[in-house]
Length: 112
Length: 113
Image (cartoon, rainbow over all chains, first blue to last red; front, side):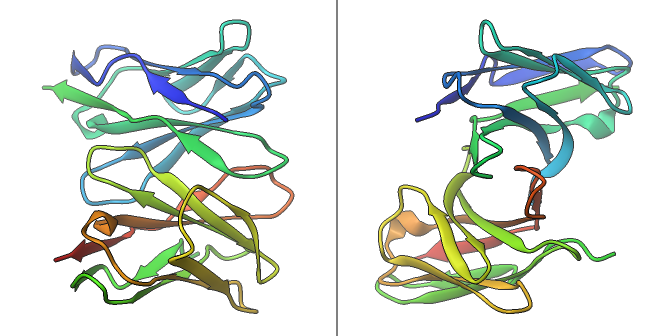
């Protein structure tokens, strides 16, 4: 099976800093990786995803990096804003099966 | 374009009762997955429905069952509720053939007393 872990339960940053949230996975057959943001009392919100044939993908203010050799991915948020404060989950899947295994989440706290 | 919707928002039940939760997928999506999220944890996969059939199932007992309707909406049923079933139940929808990109609804908060 797959297990997904995050390196830090809480990350505190100042507004304007860049944030990096890390995630490790165990199953080398996993080929799909996705990041979600979850605010209190809401469902997870899609941020960005990446497939195993890529090692980097950029969105608006976010970048996901994938290192398949060490089974690690990270989410970088540029110029972090107070509105970015939330719990961030990485999820790992196999695109052939369309199911996701989630990590426990990292809480990002952004101070003004 | 409506996103994933779920009802009800909150629900309180007592042990032993049965509950039905409902989900309407995002427009254009035909696959529905259900997840259970305990407080402070990541979502855990319960099962996935496609073409009105359960396509995959996670490690949940048979007390958890589901259904998908021809309009792609879905229900999650839980029988013989236990205190440990208290959680946020999330529905996610996706388009078949697009891999695993899933979009989540706001969830139903179930409290079992």
